[in-house]
Amino acid sequence: MSVQATITEMAVRAKKAARVMASLSSEAKNRVLLRMAEALQERQGFIRAENGKDLAAGREKGLSPAMLDRLELSDKVMQAMIAGLREVAALPDPVGEISEMANRPSGITVGRMRVPLGVIAMIYESRPNVTVDAAALCLKSGNAILLRGGSEAIYSNLALAKVLQEVLAAEEIDPAALQVVPTTDRDAVTFLLGLEEHIDLVIPRGGEGLIRFVAANSRIPVLKHYKGVCHVFIDADADIDMGVAVVMNGKTQRPGVCNALECLLVHKDIAASFLPKAAAALHAAGVELRGCPATKAIVADCVPAGEGDWGMEFLDLILAVRVVDDMDAAMDHIARYGSQHTENIVTANYANAQRWLREVDASAVMVNASTRFNDGGQFGLGAEIGISTTKLHAYGPMGLKELTTKKFIVYGNGQVRG
Image 1 (spheres, helix red, strand yellow):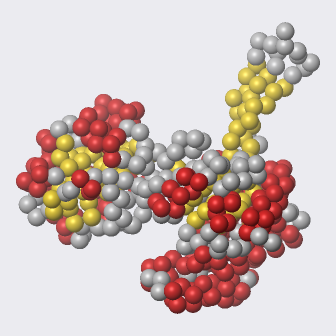
Image 2 (cartoon, one colour):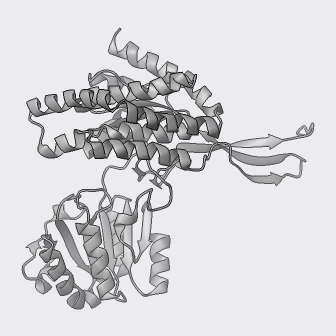
Image 3 (cartoon, helix red, strand yellow):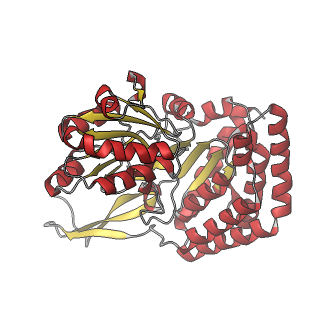
């Protein structure tokens, strides 16, 4: 069978399975997830053996130690996947939730019911644990899922899918509700992105190149974020010690993630007091500062910033720093260089904080808190499938509710429209 025929058949089967998933009770879905956790525990030998094939191939191809680390299904990663399935099973089920019921003058009663999206295709790189994490969230929210991981993890992803599908079959649920694309052929992604009749949403997760390719080639709605260029603005009324703590956490806790701080904006009236203290702490942590001329006049040992440093996602211990005239200048900078991910102000001025929340456009806008808090778990979602910087239909961390939508429901008693 050709790649195109294989992908099409998978999508058709997923569409059929999605109807089954949408009608499952919360109890049935939770039972499946808990049995999946047990199955992963029981089948670790098989899964680790298949993962070993990917690791061996990766070493032969010369993958970096960091890439091999992300690829390995270690004991720690396996236990995290098992725990993740149990955690998702414990979350409230959003499907079927009814809200906004209202009586209309015609006599009908109109409300909204939360329902699954249908078939979700997820295209991702490297980490095979994403296979289980994404499957858990999609199944709990009543969706079918098509998973296309990176070629370097093909054996691992297929092994994980096999174990999870066996549980679905044992529970008399169509295993097509969870499928991994079984080929590393790149044409498979292109074919997948054209199947708008069978797939309702595409979620790419990985580097900017992958996400831009998916967005450019998909005929299906795409939820994405290209990169996380997160800013902190130190207002004139900021508490200096608080500002230093927020900046340090945002930049140094995990510099390689999308909610890490990449650019520091400082009000000119506080720059001479704030920057020396912040720079000393950042330099002690090994952070390279790339500053504008006003910054360099205060922090002599920072590197002069170039135009390319503004809007750059460094994902490293590097921080761009700019002194700005006022809050308007900070918001203008963010509007030009930001990525609609996470934007934070440090201030004791209530009016400025409220204006910041209203006017800054990002999936998470914060006051006096580290950008690192933009995370589904930290926000109380329990788990997330990614962070969307698009606005239709989700903006920010995507948990169970973001994998559903709402349809209108109407109760009548024989009413007809005149």
